[in-house]
Amino acid sequence: MKVTWNGVYPAISTQFHDDGSINFESNARMLNQLIEDGVDGIIALGTVGENCSLSPQEKRDFLKHTLEVAAGRIPVISGCAETTTEFAKSFVKDAEALGVDGIMLLPGMVYRANREETLYHYQQVSRATTLPIMIYNNPVTYGVDVDLEMTQVLAKERNIVAIKESTTDTRRITELHNQFGDRFIVFCGVDDIALESVMLGATGWISGLTNVFPRESVAIMKLARAGRYQEAREIWRWFLPLLRLDTVPHLVQCIKLAEQLAGRGSENVRAPRLPLSGAERARVTKVYEDAIATRPDLSQFNLD
Image 1: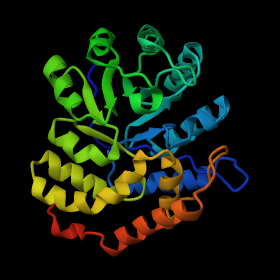
Image 2: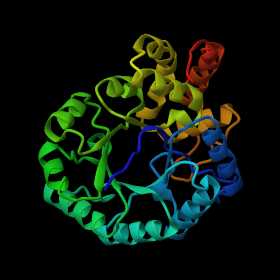
Image 3: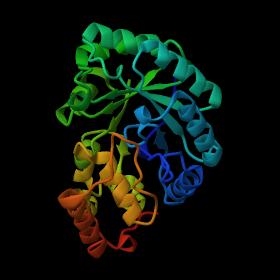
């Protein structure tokens, strides 16, 4: 299975009205902006998309709408975060019927599976679809590390083609390359180590803050992949305080508040999440305002 995913893939937010219902109009406007700003693809229904806050029907409705708006201009990969393997199998079948380009597959939610159970989950779900699968490896959040030994087992599944590497240990990228060569497409899944990850061989970046600053994200990726690291670092050093917002427990609220401050979206979230308040809200607002005040001029870089 030949898949060519690469570049910058924002994990898009799911926009809500004040009453908590999905704001499809806002999502369409934001997605069109991201495409115009040059992103290479998107992840729908990821962590930033509040996957587990949506009902089964809402997830399918959101995917259908997102695919209609994207209209084939970029790849649309859907997150799959379900509490049971059977629910996940049902979801990927429906996502395939809707026309998504691939699945970002998380381990089973709520229950913390052991190694054997995690492998079973990934194997059974991947065998339920012909879609290409990206393993989302995030032991920091989900408590299971799909390590090299487990990856060796999953390499036998033809449609498991990519790994979203979120261990926060950049050594894993080199280890994956040394053991598997180009068997897997490797995406960095942690915003504040994306530049290092690309330098080490990751060819994709799944990002939360790209929703707010897509042009800067795309510029960093283009420069880094061209080996123009000095120029990439100039933008990166400006961006890093913002990227840190993707690595905290309230990352969804941080990103959505930044989207609202940028005039791109709304900070509305679904409970038990609540919008940021107090000192945390003030801190995120200051990080955003400082970034706007010192935003680099991208016209100085030859990005064509």
